[in-house]
Length: 137
Image (tube, rainbow, N blue to C red; front, side, top):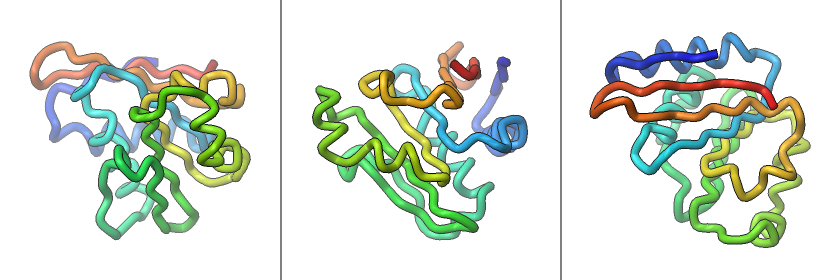
């Protein structure tokens, strides 16, 4: 599945389509170059799912937890360098819960991701346009 976003104004619609298409899925892995909009899209998804608190990038915290109708985990693995570091923060515990789990830079933990993971690759076409390629392993 592919979605094309022509401007930042289309992020809420893309977030809605993504969540509604994969309504029974809980783990989403977002990849793409720095600055392509991974965090921006996840913020829109969190808002759509009912998060009312301030949503921010977990680059330094590694994991942000939000409350909505259910818990939502926003995980950013950019600063980690080994799978052992991911295991040390308890990544496996987050993956087995039935809560939404949105993971940026998931390549490091690829072997740990379950088969039902939704992979979202974001590619910059130009300054404003993005191409989202979405698949399940």
